Image (cartoon, rainbow, N blue to C red; front, side):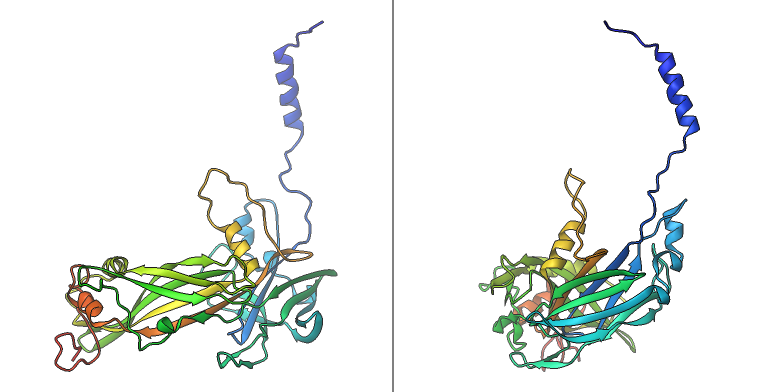
Length: 357
């Protein structure tokens, strides 16, 4: 038998219950340590950010501006070190020292000061590239902490050096952005070979120039992303390349450098290529934290910190500084439809109308 229930009675019951019980939106507080570190073997000093998650009644943005909300006291961190592990054996230990970083720009979290922790790596020379590095690319580095009695750790491999193609790395090989037959724009191909532990390769190009106004000379630059490549297997070498179209190069400069009658000349100083490499862990973290572009908004959180949250990973940077444009490409920069009004000149070319003299 079906029984009808008065709707009014249900509403009264719900309203009575809602008036007698406050809605609790905060779960019981749990101490959680958040650790961030990005090690780069080409840098001598390496920083680790150690914070704690926080919550409270009211606006979380207000709490974020209070240092005690996210920073531990010195007495709370009982152990802080980075251990170098080679073939599964701990071979060196680096105590993490506190340092106060000042001059931070205003933001969501506390500033203008912030407490970080750092260690200085051990210099060594990589024989293949004859370059000094401060972390061993054949070792693993483990951040080990004990915070308020809780053990926390995270490990990362070190992104190794990689090879930029000789034609691209050699500054004597000029960049040609014009079609070989003189029929408009061409393109320049930048090539490299991936190396151990390098997963994502992000390449940017940069034009450096001096802007001259009367007696004043001001260094300027235009930086632009060229693109990125992801290695299929970060343990195996892989040939990679990205294309810089001539049309994109000149239109980018035209859009980023204003036409200004007060500028006497702009002295072209060089075209640079800058490559930043992310390890597997950092690549995964970047994928999961990049802006959502589809209709699915849920995504898994990612951390490689045992006993806490955050990311400890590795990156590496390598650059080609000071490539020159070939004559046709520079003539296009100085006189072309896109950039001919920007007053570019180049060095000292005897007898040339494009000389900066």
